[in-house]
Image (cartoon, rainbow, N blue to C red):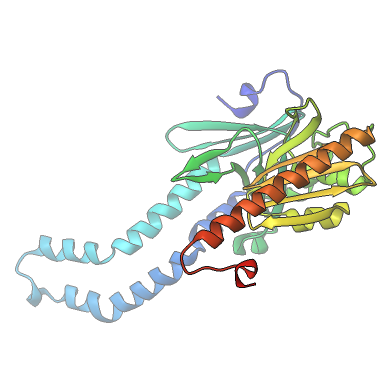
Amino acid sequence: MSIKEQIKNEHILWMGKQNMKAAVLRAFINPLLIFVAAWLALSYQNIIPALANPNNYTNAGLAIGMALGYLIPVWVYLFNAVSYILTAKSSEYAITDNAVYIQKGVLSFKTHNENLCGYSYNMNQSVAGKLTGTSDIKMTFQSGSIYYTNGYRHVHTIDFSNLADAEKVLKILQSNILSFDLSEYHLSNDTKRLADWKFAEEKTDRNGHYMLAGYWKDNYCYGFAEKCALDLVMVNCYQAYAYSDEQMVVFDYCEGDVTLKPFTDWRAYEKEKAETIAFYRKARCAEKKETSAEPGLTTAADEN
């Protein structure tokens, strides 16, 4: 079943496949090519002549088997290249007014989709892409596809590879991001724009206040606070908070989990700001006590 047949009740904005010229070049132009070329050169100069000498073997089958065995890196390289080409040929991509879809496979096909909310994207070119004028687009989603491996938290990504019309796809993604309605709040345009980009969903906190939530794989606190004109306080390397009296907004970062709480009421904002500051001051004091309690460690207060 094609990807188009699987999309129901959604308006398709774009559908595409990989550029096969770029895919074939990319299949063979990869880091393994250098190793295979060096291996073939070594085999041609030393191994192949020795294997080709009938005086070295009494069994022709053994000689052929040894020759094929020495070329295992070449077979692996060719197998990977052919697999990449077949996967590229069967891959289909689609963007609708609600989600992005990708279907790929060789013997069996698998379709995956992500809602157009809480994602970032970037475009880059491989060596093959520069030769063929194609590009890749990578989308990172911050909601719905968070999973854990060996205790580490991961965020799902979708890759559109070897696109001949990557610029068109970028324009669609830029214009089709589902925006949060923040018109009633006193947020700057930069804060609204980054909120759409960097946060995944709308929620309410324990006090019933509206907030945006998400997960950042990388610590983007400095950049976010600077662009949004927020006063940032880094508690430690994995905790931070920020606020803006002018915009009446409180930002919180803890081990990748992020929230942004905008307010229309000054008293509610001041209360949330004070509670946030008090919470992290308490956390910082507790951390200092734990550090000073460790053998061999002293603090400035201990020394005085």
